Image (cartoon, rainbow, N blue to C red):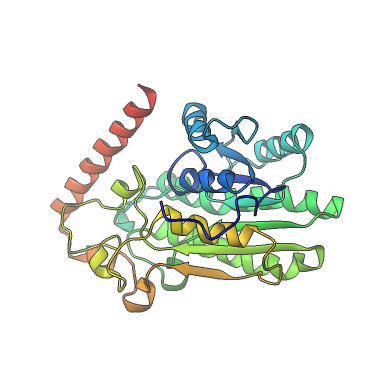
Length: 298
């Protein structure tokens, strides 16, 4: 792992909630936040996965990582869980909206349920958690920081991931809007738009075919010639959650090796797939999903 440029205590005194913290980018970043002094809270829907993530992030350090099983799409559950954190641990200082769902599919074949599953997790979930934390900060006269994990599709859109592209664009709008509305309270809202960073399961879901020449996750679509890393994402996250630049708010920062400037970095190349290719992709996704669930329950 590359050496961190930050002091080990740069996040001391920070209490950070990461939604979707049991897997993927959220799980990977959590360990780095703990390593730099933060107390971290992880939310997700599967308690067993959260417990594994907490053990990994804590590295054997007691009292540094806590978990709650929460469906961020349910505003009442979010508010109750937020009250529990405030009561048992104290106010949050930071929130990372990371909960998401995504899969690649031709939009014409999407069901209403599939659209809702993705869009509500990203858009409704991000608003519910931001609102629950923000109203408490405002009522108590506390400063706070919200960081949302987006994608460069907020600027370009992307074929074949329309529910995700729409929802993340909405969270971008929330970030800009509340940055203005809440700046007077000392509450900052920013977003990160990372390019391809390999993680378990999610990476497989975004690579539905074996045709390496197409898709937005291929290194040859990135001017930097490589994918990103959790370490790089964590470094930028630590800076944005620290007290280094309170003047920065309302920004969405791309971290994608210039992919969105050169391509753009979307799934437009998948327009070349045939119906047979899509049928094979669906089977591959089902197999990956079943294998992931089996691994986590074994």
